Image (cartoon, rainbow, N blue to C red; front, side, top):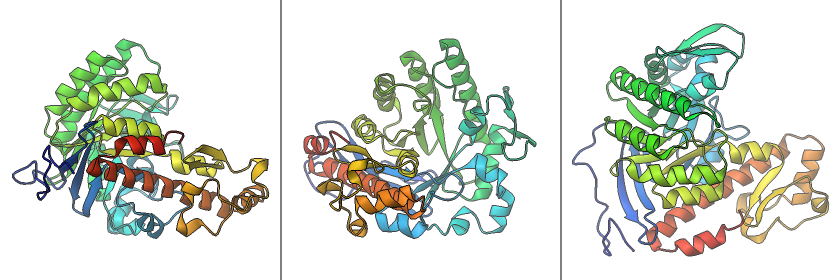
Length: 385
């Protein structure tokens, strides 16, 4: 076993003499063949082993599952959305109810994105300036404004463990000039977010720059030079094909501070996670496992399958032996297909539980592979997934 570059088994070494914020990360292991790293993220709501995957609870809920479900599957950290929660039920109401943890009944860490991506996606309902983003609520059309300072303040009121700075994330494809302008605005907003943070509020900075290596290098240098609790790579899950996404991750990840946690935003295909971990990424989130489940797709070690396929109509054996999870083994493909055909809500719920369980196992096996040097076997196991 290799820890911190040594073939010994000492207690994990901290990268900090002392924590510099409410959230900090320590590296505990490194894969000698790939450079993949394992670590431990310390937060006000507990410690989480990395690499980790955060199920997406956009509106304070991971669709179709409870906090108890997530805990039982081994998840310790979730993601929620600043934009949606600020519109409904509103950050002030959440604060009066004791914060987002109390509202959700969630005991582990919560990360909120800044709301910027959702606002940027309202192309016909928003206007971007250096001050921030003016937009109309998708719920009632009311006029709203989101600035770096407002985003940080909303997240502080939600009482989350990790807050993301507001960034500008242009969709793919875009011209180089647009990517560069968005990057420079992101840099300015990051500094404003940092200054606006409440005492003890843990902020993560975001690197932008599109698919251009030189812009990514510049952004990693600028954002990496600011004192954030962690650093994220943004703008690689907004339409880029895999062959363009992966080089950006491989180029950018090693440029981020090695003593801080590294977060790849919005990327969640199993093969993309494996690639990113090998590049030195520690945190992930994605709607893929839950969204695909609601549309009848489940993940197996032989690839993703459609539960509505006619061949499952009378199949009692599971999709494949490697994906029989004890808590779900009583439910056959035939039964789950029947539930989807009958439009029973239990069908999407069972598919969601299956996919989340698949991801929980993937991340646990990634951590084990880093600890024990079994990366080639892990890649073989998930070759088709």
